[in-house]
Image (cartoon, rainbow, N blue to C red):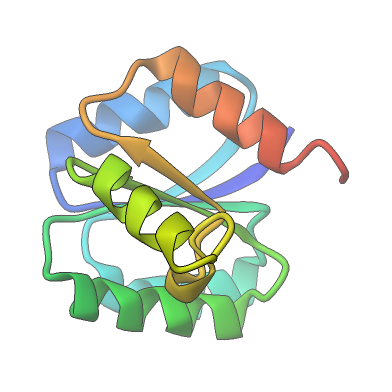
Length: 127
């Protein structure tokens, strides 16, 4: 399946998401702070990065940009309570898929496990 880098600042939620993804056959590396994610992404070259941390948009964008530079082929999923608003803003600016955010998929929190697995499958279908 896919190599997944999970960035989740809640340890209990990180463990749940890690378990869901591992049970679905994905190889998961999980971190609870975004600071270490660009280095890991550069070394591991994940297929997918799942980013779910509570931080201001500008700070999150900075980490996403660093990850994108370290692992340019990785697909990035942004999990956020305001994912629908972010998607609409990106589409209104003509940024299909959230290009200004350098993410490939927005998924609203709370989310259903099947939605996350489907998003990963859709993002990695061409590999």
